[in-house]
Length: 107
Image (cartoon, rainbow, N blue to C red; front, side, top):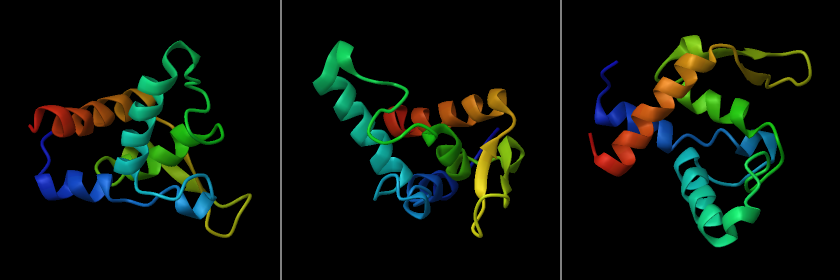
């Protein structure tokens, strides 16, 4: 999987959390705030609810799906805007690794 920097920046700047009222920031800001919380809270850090309610993995999947649409799909059962569901966890993790490598290794 090879992506252009602009594509990865689009993922990091995606405001996937806002429509769910979970977090008021971009995917990149969410990742930064999670890392800060992990550092500050240490062993008390709650990975299930890192800085918002549970369900954040599916919401983050919506941003990652900008790179790899086969990660999941939007379901329109419970809201007019739809809720994203991760269906391919392996691809989700691979795509996430690429984004993290871009952030920390600038590759």
